[in-house]
Image 1 (tube, rainbow, N blue to C red):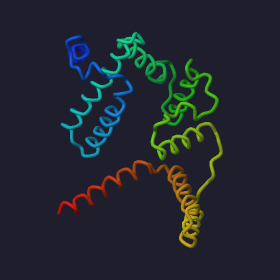
Image 2: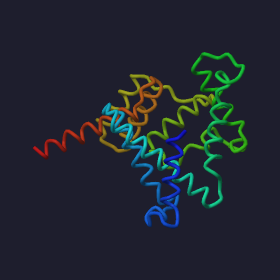
Image 3: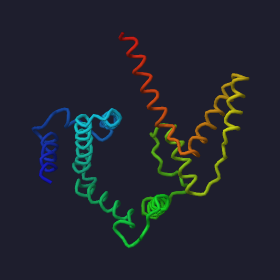
Image 4: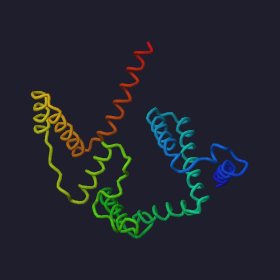
Length: 221
């Protein structure tokens, strides 16, 4: 792609001997904060349905991905072409129902096949539990939901939370005002949401963002 080549040339120039002093100082670790920030800016653009912002922020993330890949190439860790080759091969390998001979339309089975193929790959073959490989820096509430998903697929028993037990744990907290009872209610709420296919982490994030905007607006007015 011509535009990809142009961007890659820009990255190489920025990192070159006559490039930008700031860009030349960067390392993969120093780029982590920028990477996280750009992802959140993409989320903002998606949730506000702003196509122009989304186009710009996706470009920023694309640049950072290519930039960090080139840092790896400069350190002789891998080449940018290897990064592209690996993700292409991974996507083809994990979609046998598209690129192979498997005829599968059931989404749940497709996800299960993906997980099984993933576990059979060389770097994952020595994983001791279904939870190995979950990113350590994933926000805790998302990590909990990810663990519940993997536990379900692995056939690990998860306590069933029905509406009665949920309200019971809420009442226990309201009566006692103890933090331990509040923790129990929140735990039950998380599991109940997961079992009823409600994306509670996403709901909480959107709600908090909405309330932050409301309170900020009140202060400004």
